[in-house]
View 1: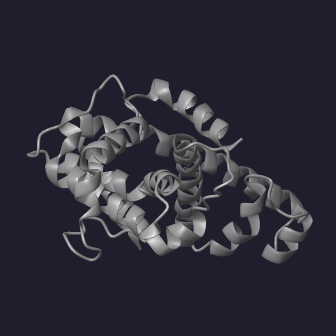
View 2: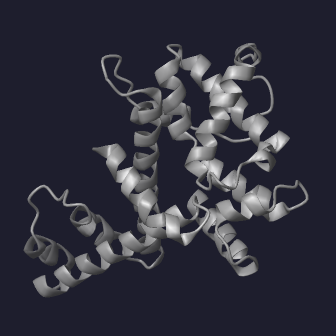
Length: 248
């Protein structure tokens, strides 16, 4: 699965560079740095839905929104725009939306002229799946920027759940994850630890301990993932607060 391949990439990068994905990308703004390109592509592949949510808020035609999103990533990865990134704006979230706005203001008409299905697709983007998740309410008071931040937070949290599920599946404990995942964020619909214990064939105390370990691992993965998108560990907590504020 895709997450498995990305996990291998992440381990390879970590073994060669004592840095995060994004700071690696910033530090290696030249095209000769292969790991920098792979890291940037991995980040783009993980966090394209928020940009799509942003342009959906600004463009009424869904097909045009898709074309603009795809065209942006083609330019970003092929032209290596990241070489012009400002290290003082050390968050990938900020860089991505700034670059996208610049692209729209300067390249909108060119991108609109691209025929659907034409041109090189540098990233395979599942727009149909994104459309089922990105709900744009015309009556909403959210600005396009607020929609972007909100979708970024949603994408991040869904990504952590996917990573966590992958970990448990590899350990042969997919049933444990399925039974306990509702306790991570309190969305267990009245299910009790006693019921989970019966389902998993363990004591209630053991079920509670397993739930505690799951929540702890969730928090660890969340911070690790955020660390991939900021330029230093001192920014992780602040970014975490900003993202949860976007969900309120």
